[in-house]
Length: 141
Image (cartoon, rainbow, N blue to C red; front, side):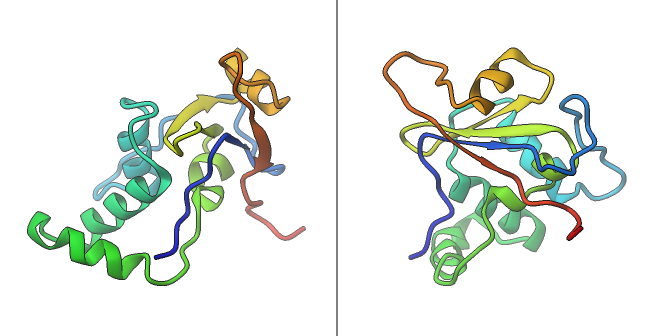
């Protein structure tokens, strides 16, 4: 089974992200991938891994019943998947994504002091480490 989980890593916003602060993705009609991802992570920091979030969003959008999700999750991760570096949260909405030592994720708005510390590679808790990478750019230029 493949994984999208990072550990001790901070995904800073994309170089071409124009957001000046973390913004809640709008919901117009059916919730977007960004809105569903935000709704899972923001109220529950460090509760879910990237794999948990990505599969839960997929299952919700695909209408997979709870009783079939264990089997569907195995099938979903049988092939490679885009990680949270490709998420609109870091590409468009101004959210950095931190993965702790267990791979659980939390969001930090680009305007926050914690975001600034993590973006500099400074861990939030003593004794931990953090690697920094960036969300993928929205444009090729």
